Length: 298
Image 1 (cartoon, rainbow, N blue to C red):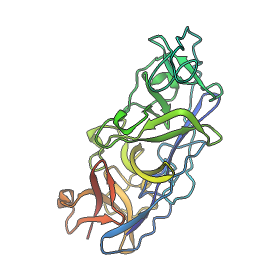
Image 2: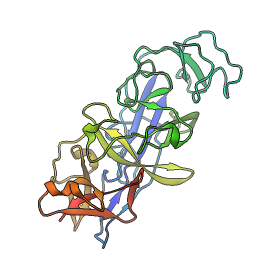
Image 3: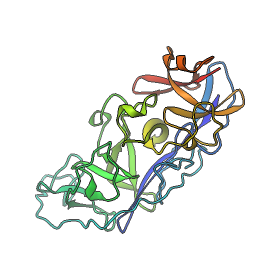
Image 4: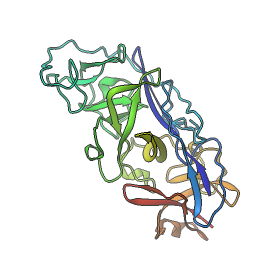
């Protein structure tokens, strides 16, 4: 079985408009698959969109275009949270007037964040709502210290994987400006959610824990992130993962493109509730945080 990767891209645009694109690995517009001994081959290209990302299409068919194509997105409304010209102690900070990670240069309760007036630097801002990984947001001030509002939810700044919630979050999502250029220092964590049980946490309430592909050090990297679930239940025909419900993945197996229950290999205990199925893996294996994932298929 072969799956096209859903790309994850989180981009900010000036004038306080914020967007996030995400495409999930098995999601996507064209999910082509060729059955093979192992289960399936999955293929994915990561791309960071600098334009209107859509958390769910997470170029859901684009910050989700599973096709490997470019992710489409809808800009998330950002209100005007102008940077605060409060005193900063810039001495010792890696960037001036303040640094994103580790936080440096702003006097609490202010926090350092991207200067969204031009996306060309940093600035101190207020924290009106202390949102974290499981919080939705529409403006910068709706995220806590050390977090940025991108793609409709708060993402944690980081430098290495160990700075992120474990065991599944990775320091791998680069925030870009509207020209798709990386914003210096704006590296954030993917979600520490469970794709077999989205309700277990790690995403805002009601969102789906999905598979995405990004790039790190020039190489494709599988990660988990949050997106709006579709209506497709187990066994429903799908065109992208954006059309499938929580805990399922749009995949093609034996020429059948369906929403299939996500399972963990090799045991595949999750498939006990789907009669006549076993946990089929991908080739190459789809592994995140030391766990290999597959889908329940006949």
